[in-house]
Length: 71
Image 1: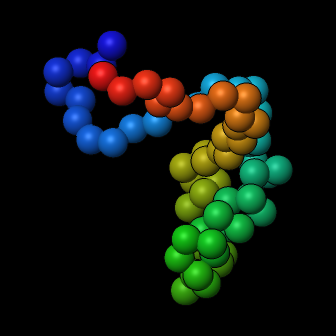
Image 2: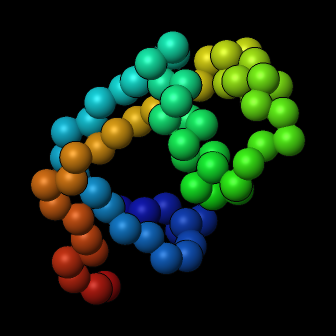
């Protein structure tokens, strides 16, 4: 059950998750940025930020998604 403070549209995804840590995550992070924002002003700065923030990539292979009912 969602708390009363939750609002907005939502979905759920079930599946197997894989966590990619740096350095393996760097090129998928760059690819993600390019797809959303285009080219960065400074890719070296972007990469340094990803390392500083210890970013990861979470890949989920969906086996089920919903909602499959309303209510």
